Length: 286
Image (cartoon, rainbow, N blue to C red):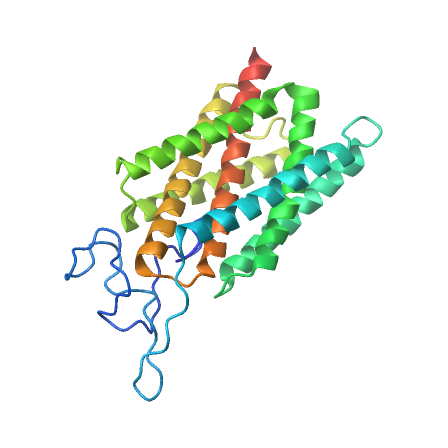
């Protein structure tokens, strides 16, 4: 199970040492007694064959409870850090410079930790919880500033909107209205790459005093861009759900629950920011 989040981990990649035909559990969509019907030709978590030809002992398999507990821990860390930063890092005129500086620094640290975790072969709870804490600091200051200076009350709307989108994606996924395949994952990754390149270009234009950059954060264009961001976040959320479903079905090691928590936390943070942007523009225009 590879984390499907905005850092573009290698979703769906299997273990090269997995022996063919060894399925401790039936994968999603498989026919009992037959080959898998999903994206894996072999079980990516099947026990490896050791030097003497014997099969290594399988680790404890992941359960849905493992995913729920670890995701709740990561999201709880984000929320706690966000609330503390909102309370302890004021955004009034006397302190806004310091608070903004700490928020930007926290965002950079969170990004670095997420990249380090994405390139690790195994999940690190310390890295994931560290990412969640620094991401929470950034979200707390950003939300506080948005609510104070741009659109009072928009943060509550943003949280509710994020829950609504997440619930809608979960329902659509469970009803199989969304079919997550390798083609779906490739399309989502390509679209998100273009999205991030546009964001980078917007930052460059803004840095060189080109007014409002490319205009991606205001007016009608900002709303369209924000809606596209929400749709991409929803797509990655569906990839996260597929990640969890595959992990449980294939009998992945329990430690993989931390990767699921990492992917879900990163995606939900991204989704919240996109929802907040759209709502902020609507409130500002109103």
